[in-house]
Length: 117
Image (cartoon, rainbow, N blue to C red; front, side):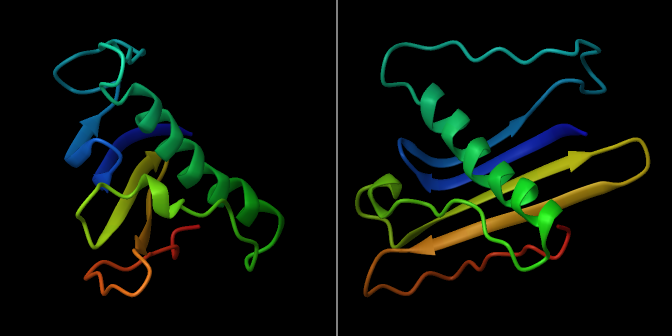
């Protein structure tokens, strides 16, 4: 399975981020490298992938299993909530799942979708 795309909304330093990972049609390389200054958000990209993939691993064992939750402290300052989405593919099918979290006492318009898992 390969990760095709990662979307972040109000997560850490990212208000909105759509990251298309290798391989892509316009670039045949098989590697994606994150480069940036300290505090640019590299760790938040990896953290979001870790959270999303923990749900994939948990669901291998049982359909009702849960992965890691999004810490409220990782929601961008001033935002109502956060939304993480990953699209992955194997040789036959594409899978997309997402997690949403609102700040305590706030309403956020995004919902988690875990049907692909």
